[in-house]
Length: 120
Image 1 (cartoon, rainbow, N blue to C red):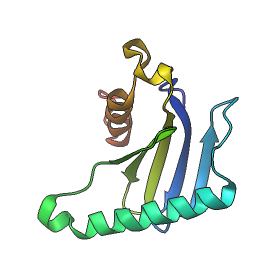
Image 2 (cartoon, rainbow, N blue to C red; image 1 turned 180 degrees about the vertical axis):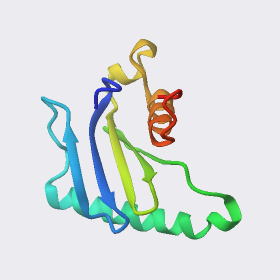
Image 3 (cartoon, rainbow, N blue to C red; image 1 turned 90 degrees about the horizontal axis):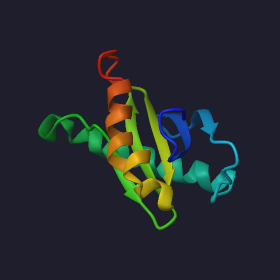
């Protein structure tokens, strides 16, 4: 959450989409109810399983992006058994080159997940 002002919230799930941890930026209101969020995460986790099944042919998945009018959600594998979902807003802050954005967030999260301290 502290890595970029554009991040609304992040959620860690298992590979079934069950929520393990959540972090929300202060002052942010969710667009989806808890039940809608849980259902969405389960669908995204199932899609990630499908990508993982193709990995012997196309390589290991690094991340997936789903862009909507109000949010952009990025999904990253977190080890072999978990996923992290990072949601960012679709407001003017996101497009300000001095305040990060989708590319910078993806690069930053991938650097953190690589566990290489020289990249974080």
